[in-house]
Structures are given as structure tokens and as C-alpha cells.
Image (cartoon, rainbow, N blue to C red; front, side, top):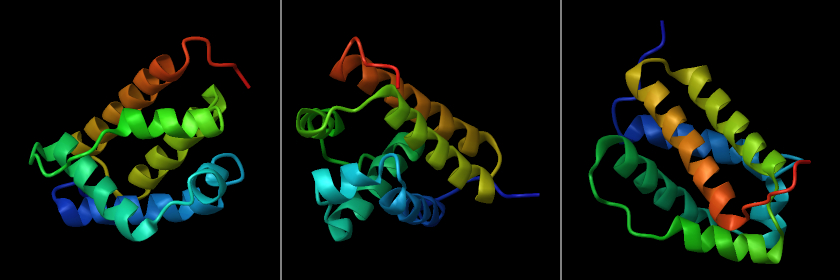
Amino acid sequence: MKKDITDRNDLELIIKEFYMKVRTDKIIGHFFTDVMHVNWETHLPAMIDFWENLLFFNNDYEGNPMSIHKTIDKKHPMKKKDFNRWLKLFNTTIDYHFEGVNAENIKMKANRIAKVMQISLDKKIKKA
């Protein structure tokens, strides 16, 4: 039986592994490597802070994810398949290591975030 997500260390494991997959992913990797040229030394801790705040309400995250994604979308429009791929990679990373209330909660929150971003970025995102 797998354990549930209980602290920042668990989130660090998820985020680091998830973004290792993302960097080389044929569907969404280019958003991080070619479109935005992500600085991983700052991005990974920010993402850990983001998810820690969403899951454990610690208020350590300061940022505006929607603004960042609007910038990305202007440079290279994101499609429904991109959000679906992001969710698949995120969820499989969580499922590989964890199970329980927090594991399900973080996947539910990720799904909601993806839906809100799709709607906010483009009300008529192309199905691809």
C-alpha cells in the first residue's frame, strides 16, 4: 500500500519527477524548453510552493499562474490536447508514488486548474 501525500518532501518528489517527464515530452515539452526557456532552478521551487499552498494552505506561494500562461499562449497557443497531456503526466506521477485523500485532492485541483485555464485562455480551444 502506498502512502498519502503528507508534506513538502512528498510534493518535491512529485514536482521534480513530473517536470523531468515534461521536459522531454513530445507533446508539451517544447512549451518549457523552446517557448519559455524555463529556468528550472527557480521554477521547481515555485511549483512546489504553489502545490504546497493549494494542498496544505500554507500561503508561501506568491505568483500569478494565469498571467504566465497567457504569456505562453500568446507565444504558442495551447490546445486541449496540451492540457490533457499535462494532466496525464501529473496524475500518473502522483499515482505511481501515492494514494489517499491528499493524492486524490491534488489530482482534482489539477483538473480544475486545467479547465479554468482552458476557459480563460481561449473559450474556443481547438480540439486536437
